[in-house]
Image (cartoon, rainbow, N blue to C red; front, side, top):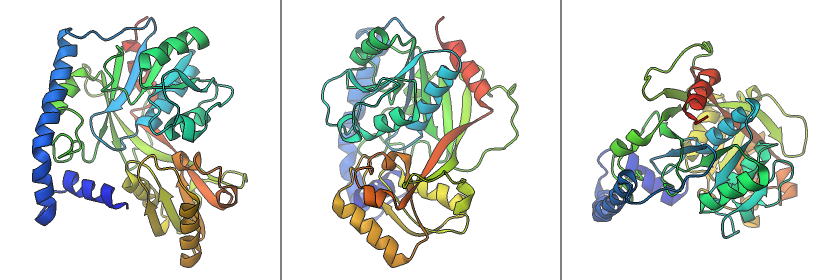
Length: 366
């Protein structure tokens, strides 16, 4: 695990840090207070109407969280967009395009038929969504109002899916889906930089229309489509990461994820929560001989792939495994790409997708 991520994880999620870690945490508290005051003021101005969010003439469904790190926002955005398309809507996905070189807003990563921007240009997560969502436009830019207008005018989108949009309050939304880590939802309950919170969870929860708690462990297999969430005023669902396939980089036939059972592997990734990828592999019975974590949104270089390939040879592993988000950034290294396997992972909703989309569509304006 990279050192910065490791230090932050220890400060934010482990109780009572000691020594220099405690000193570092104490030094971060005053900036955390300042950040919290600025965030609270901004939210109050929107909540009171002193600052008006711009409303577009189509429903906006936002997926986001209140902590730094992976809570399944991108898999949920893919699930929501794909599910709405299957139910007769014409969705478009709006993403900030973090990490991409293309500046400005209204950058068309995909029109649903063709992909126009590489991961380096449009960002790794938009590239993954474009690959995963045939038939659905993916548009990037910090000004989601601009991207939303383009989606409506150019692609006739009738619903806009806002990826990582909970704090992007300049665009009015009709449904806010809040993703929360079901195992450790708020860390040490401190705001950035002393903790993982982007804003006060008490006020944030009041804005949420649907809450989804993500977990790593497997959900019950038998769920009824007629089951309803426990909280009728604010529907609450659980979602588990579920492996759906293992795709060889050499273009061979996809393998069932069960093939990882007892397999000696080297795994690597550059995602916000690498420990969750590691836990998913371990839950599948893989024997992880070596695990390499790079910073989130990291773009691999020639030296990195040599390092990974060399470690795999040295450890005599049977397979090199990475995530879909990493896979879209590795196609340029064709020789290395042919030696790896990409684990496809989705979210499975409890108590079922029909209940989830029933709650979502009910909240969308007609």
